[in-house]
Length: 125
Image (cartoon, rainbow, N blue to C red; front, side, top):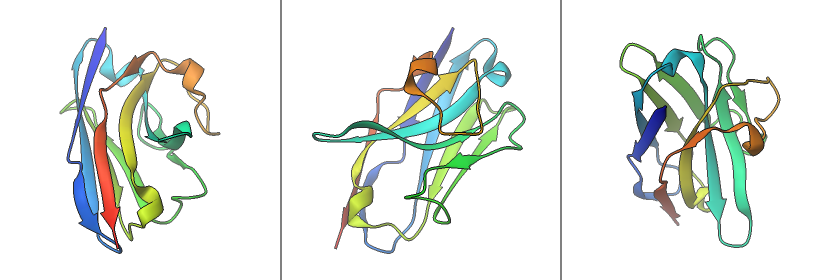
């Protein structure tokens, strides 16, 4: 069982940066691929980024490519999302997710075994 708790959300200005953290607990952390999804009203949860067990194969949605970076620290059982050049369209609730399966394509949400509770990111103009 894996539990995930996001932190680091808040209000930032357009063009600013923000780092989200996801602290995990439970067994088999390194056996799970980790991902970030986001959700805005009326759009459901959308894939943002994912990273494999070794941290060697990050994947990003086109909308965040070149601006966001995902990383994981298996020794600390944590995953991070570094967000740069933030835009108002990045405003959403961001969710950390863990999956026992991995693909280098956007991770299907049906593969997610564990979800965090979400953290709000708001980008002002």
